[in-house]
Image 1 (cartoon, helix red, strand yellow):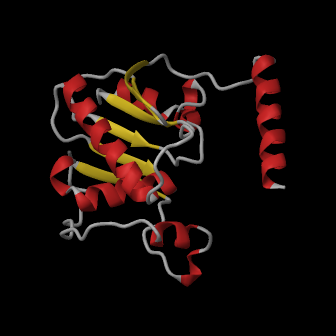
Image 2 (spheres, rainbow, N blue to C red):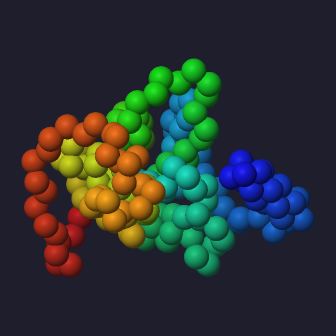
Image 3 (cartoon, rainbow, N blue to C red):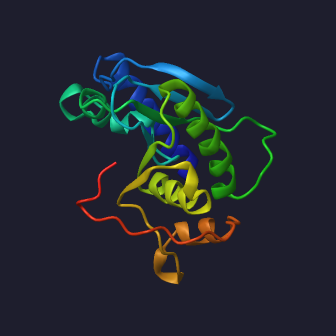
Amino acid sequence: MFHLLDQMRRRQGHLLDSLGLGPETTPSRIVLAEPGFRLRAYGGEGAPAVLVVPAPIKRHYIWDLEPGVSVVRRLAGAGFPTYLVEWLEQPAGTPSGGLAEQAGHLLDRAVAAVEADSGRPRPVLAGHSLGGTLAAIFTASRPGRVRGLVLLEAPLRFGPEAGALAPLVAASPVPPASPLPMATRRDRC
């Protein structure tokens, strides 16, 4: 049943796109492309690089729907070299593993690509929802790889009351990590 609902939702999206009612995304260039993953670059100079991590169950352009409300456009316009993860469907035959482990490998390569493309070490990761959870797991397991972490509505504590994501995260093996220092509003990148 969920498959049929998803097909219907996708058809509605394609219809809206064909009528010119799709998202008005900011021009970007692809700096990394791998099976199941693309990394888009939007420009910006002078500040630390920002790597935006959307939820893998949402389209990347949720951060870039139209010019007036585009997070990537505002970040790049404020001088931050801005990069956005675009999750793609995993090709058939992809080895299965924990979601956090797979995302960690992809984010590791994305961070390296951001560093190489921007010339700036240790980007700031910004994630929303499950993308924020994955960014937090990545940061906790590799604290020296990022400059900072911004989370928006990212569930970080999973127990029996956490709903549908609890079993998914619990099944993802995560290596122990050292605690991160807590940032305050005064802390700047």
